[in-house]
Image (cartoon, rainbow, N blue to C red; front, side):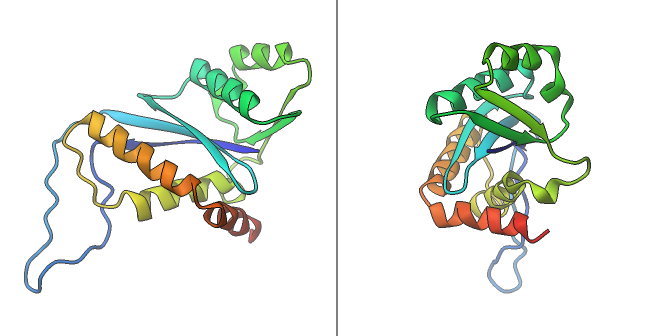
Length: 168
């Protein structure tokens, strides 16, 4: 399973859109900087995710790894990048307590194109949440969660993330 973190802020992800001829499209949003962080694990046909307010640190990573272990039967191989919180003492200690049920491997440095979760984040931001202007943080959280749940119900989409990563 490949694992990675991503995030959103209350500022919209701006992308090309349409408007009536001669009228410039306008996105109205509040200049709040609260961030919503996401962590996801992708298997060949499914992905698992969690959303957290603020930044993801070691305790959230451990919570997510426990979540994965509950939902995936058998030993679990997690492939992820070299984020410092992935290498933290807290995470290492947790992995040691799993007695081999959880094995961690790192991707090469500067190789996000090898991780299918990166393509999941790209699709999420470019196709599910473009130009979305949340009124508040709660609305952003709800909308982001629903978008990920919609994506999760499309196994062919998840498989496409793998195919995209295998092109490199």
